[in-house]
Image (cartoon, rainbow, N blue to C red; front, side, top):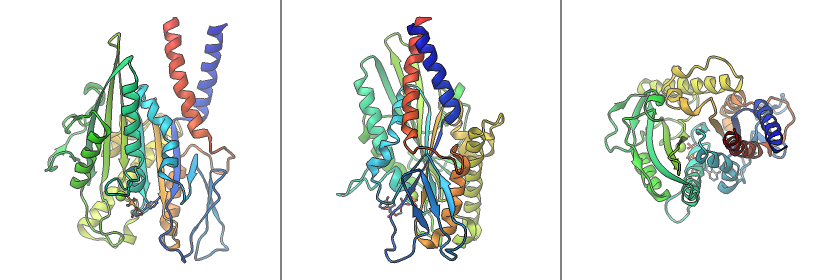
Length: 376
Ligand code: ADP
Ligand code: MG
């Protein structure tokens, strides 16, 4: 019967979800800046695996990493977004979603998330395309009325600051979302947004207010995590409300302290960054391993994102690497971090198409769940 088919489908979906979890890790290799130089990455592409070779010792053992998806230096912004799109759709269905860009300074995090979005050469990144989709879906749904709000904060030296205020000096408190209507930083400026351009203007303001300082690696390297949060409140004709949020996170550079040759304040920054990134890694790894204790409370970043990590939330980590041989050490450390939080087992055979399919299945299932509930 129909009911039985729905039940069987649901069972199938549950076992698929059990098998694959809600965490995905994609890896993106940026184009090389050094045309003649040797690359440390042997990108094989098709099967979701990536091989790195120690440039100082090419005969040594090659390291192989596996991810849900790998984007080579030629991948376009559109290709990267295409594999993220189903995730964005599920935000409108009531799921909380968190997308991170991880990697050393200069590896392409901001390029992927924001892209060059001013001047003549517009090449929009994930954030813009995601928001564009959110607004398109919300205006196309006649059965649900959506209200969309945005916040933008940064975490710098374990302090949360409002990026939408010209003077982001006041430290903000992280509060329990469940008693604050889904807002983990209720005191941060919360702006109602009607279009993707509204959000773009907020992002520009936020980027301007973000803390920059110089290191030996990059004189405009971002030493803070920036978190753009979009809250979606949908109300259907029965006045039933769905609330969800999307976090778009451009993490601080993951490079290790010794390489940046830093001391004093810069050293303190680097230590805070290293600690919060390793806490993030611990939380995602604990979720991937389905541990009973998830150490959210160890950093501001994981506290802030708690409602979008774990439970029914979906997490996508976009790990970025620089292909130049000089960055071999950082590249391996980024890949190891990303591999640790990935549910894809080292050496396991898998398809690199699975990611979007799984999200598609979940989306369909949510509709089925609604059907099942209405049949009860
Ligand atoms: P990060 O934010 O990780 O420090 P950026 O996104 O600022 O790194 O990238 C460093 C530089 O490399 C920038 O000039 C950026 O435009 C360029 N870049 C990064 N990724 C790509 C890419 N996929 N294609 C072309 N240029 C890129
Ligand atoms: Mg950046």
